[in-house]
Length: 163
Image (cartoon, rainbow, N blue to C red; front, top):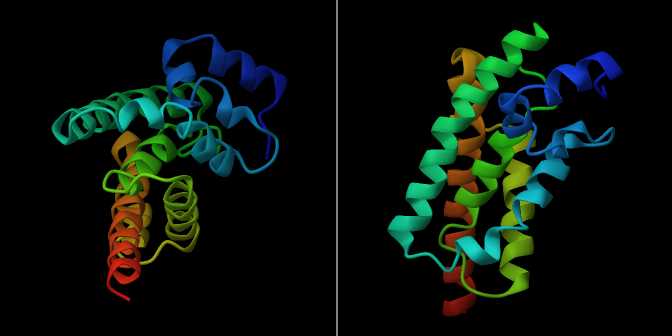
């Protein structure tokens, strides 16, 4: 469900709301998680130019910032895990693509794999989604979905290279 006008004002009136909503991407009336994942691709060409340690440090910093922003926004909205929070999709998408080879096809495959694992919530994603609360819970399930997508992408890349 799309946020009401009052909720939009609450979201956009605090820095945590801007961060948690992916600078407004989470306000999309349709599929805010998918929109958030797509918006996360915009800085990806810049991110992939970083050395791996820099890339992972940046993602870790956004993960920690996302815990804070998600906790603050959820408290301000009085909703445990509002759908408008998409900073978790940013982190999950960036983790899914952390080891992706160059090429738009691998970006597309990584995007689709992350969305699959985020929506299907296989273990341990489902465990984190059910058992871990607060800002950490909001961020952790998507980070785990991103790691599973990265592993699946690595297997696909290996398969293409070897067959």
